Length: 464
Image (cartoon, rainbow, N blue to C red; front, side, top):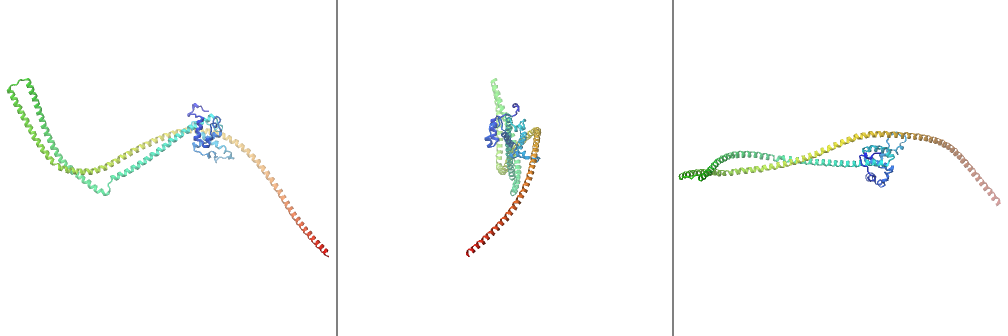
């Protein structure tokens, strides 16, 4: 018996086991008739074997016929005797394979032939735990398959969209043969106009920029001179105020200072007039520049026409750029899908490693199963010896039956001989009776004729 402290799975109650078997294992009529008393405390052999058979059908995908088929290569004198033992042998062999997977290592053939209540509950709880685990794994595997299919569908759709976009891109980038000549002519004219306009505009712009730079330099120099004069005037005023506050000046000195100040004012006025003359000269230059505006406007009109043509090309380029961006987005989606696919492959590898580990454990369990199989084969050999002994008895009985049949045949032969003699006697007796009847008929006829003759004679005599 297994210790409940050492179990790797929970031990279910009898009510839970009965409900689980009714809902998931047994069929409609079986589920109605199945009760708690059928497995605990005194399990019934028929129900235990039936539950095992249904579990094996669900786990190993077996049919009912598989449990009743005797191997053809078995050389047994009376194979019909094995048909009753075949289901038990199949149940024992398959349960010995199933229970180690369910983490139950204490299984014996007596659990099928002579089950006990507590041990059967531990076995069934281990099987129920394994079935729950199997159902969850199957659900996750089905979800994984659905995700993989959906990812493949999305990838195929995105590839179709990419192909369509590439075809559109080729249509947009490729110029039709009817418009290639016009496109080449327009592109050559545009390039020539661009070169001419750029050359003329560059020359005029360079000359105009040089003149503007020179004028700016002159204006900057005059501005510096004006600033210097302003600073000098401000300093002189400050000195004047200081001198007034500090020294009492004589009238002669004041006259001299006033004359000097007047001279400075005349100089400032002269500089101002010069700056005004230069300003007017520069204004005339600007008016001359205004005369160049119609030529510049004509060139601008040409540039606008060129820009309209360029905008057409820009629109085409923008459409191509948008399609490229869409292609990039779709490529990123494909990368995400491929990354998900790699993750799924990694999970599959991890599951394969787990399966390899389980295979190693299964090999160990297979070795244990082989050992148990040897024990079962020894028990089967014992049963075979008993069967052979029974076969010897049956052969002896058959010999007696053959002797009786030989005696019976002899008696039948004798009876047939007696029958034949009786038939011969009866035939002779019949022939003798027929001869006797013929003689009687002849004598009867003769006597009748004699009577007739005598009657005729009497009638004659009477007439006389």
